Amino acid sequence: ISNSNMMNSDDIRHSFSVAMSAMYQNEVPLYGDLIELVTEVNNDVLNTQPDIKAQLEHTGEIDRLNLERHGAIRLGTAAELSMMRRLFAVMGMYPVGYYDLAPAGVPVHSTAFRAIDTESLNNSPFRVFTSLLRLDLIADESLKQAAIETLANRKIFTDAAIKLIERFENAGGLTDAEAQTFITEALETFRWHDKTPVSKELYERLLKQHPLIADVVGFKGPHINHLTPRTLDIDTVQQGMQARGIPPKAIIEGPPRRACPILLRQTSFKALQEPVSFKCQYDATDNANNNTAEQYEQGQHTARFGEIEQRGVSLTPKGRALYDTLLNKARDQLGATPNESNAAEYYRILEQVFAEFPDNYQTLHADKLAYFYYQPVAEAEMAEIGDINLTVPDDKETLIHLIDKGVIRIEPIVYEDFLPVSAAGIFQSNLQQDQQSHYDGNSNQQEFERDLGVNVYDELALYESMQAESLQNCLKILQKVA
Ligand code: OOG
Ligand code: NI
Image (cartoon, rainbow, N blue to C red; front, side, top):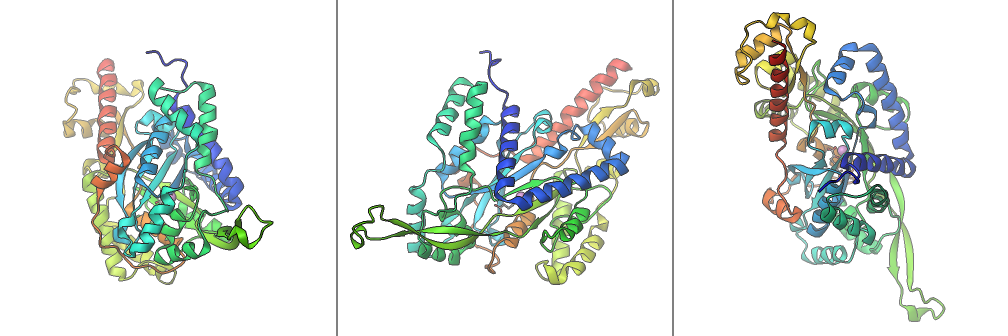
């Protein structure tokens, strides 16, 4: 079948992320201020640090940088999750990774929907951290039943969106016109609704159980709760936020500041208190003139916020294990959850502990701690190659020799995913009340995948194959030149 008259999924994703960003900017103006600040800081870095600029040019990230966003949503049921998976597939976004947040006291488990190959990622890196509420962790049986019933009664996708998802699946794509309608209809699912389908009384019971449960069960749909631009210097943005009256959370999550950034560092500004109208049911016979029988009671809800992220090189299983060990060590040494009162102490410990993690790309590569692209350096410089054997891609010594000779250049493969401990910190910073520090329920990836309808991609396998593919391509080019 020829799909030439179908719109490319990368283009649909790009248009959708632009539309989503415009909607959120309208709903949460502070997000717009944040984008301005991040753009300024990024331009500064690109103008003053030519190495970073060259690196982003080599990896193809330079064009995506100012468009790069991730968002987050929270879903209530398996049916919602599986339809959401089908909706994201229209935009070339697939579930990558499994995150269990229960051990950190957040009753959800999650995945990230995103593009999976280098080219698509560079065309549009838009991703959505998607959580499913774990009602099995609610102890109060009657409240759990009320939550299940409320969720069973809501419809978070428009009929037109569902039709177009089915059309995409049957036809293998959408025409331009269909894609435009799809974007408009899909956006409806993520919109903020200030009228709730639940009473204030039920909302408050849910809230007391856990603020996240109220945020999901208490609303008509999974409003996008933040959108996150990517910065090249998160410490400068964090300071700039303060100066602009955007109150940041106390701690930058993730690894410490480094010469060669690894994984992901994140900070956010506190969630807004927003007015909502709770549904009240009046007996229509009370008032003969009132036949609508539906009225609203005022209240407020805290859920939506802004976040900034700085991304670094993706780590191999070995590198990730070292990261997890060092992060745990730093937290143990602090002896408390990092917060406002111990922030300086925490950063000091973090830096000291992470001194053990090599901080230059050559060593990260040679020690197999991180993933890299292999790129042939300009042909003119390759006279050197001579009789070097270019047919053994797994021969690490030959490879390192070629890198040392300047024939092959390595560039970091950027981390495209999330970190469970950091994500929990982002969730927690936006919950009003102190919660229990963990749930005992088992991590349950199988159940999540059953609800999702497919297995999630293993992010490490994706990075591994990006690296392998770039090595093949690189050697092919060099073999031709030699
Ligand atoms: C998701 C929080 C996690 C991140 O960037 O780690 C997250 C949420 O609050 O729903 O977005
Ligand atoms: Ni986020």
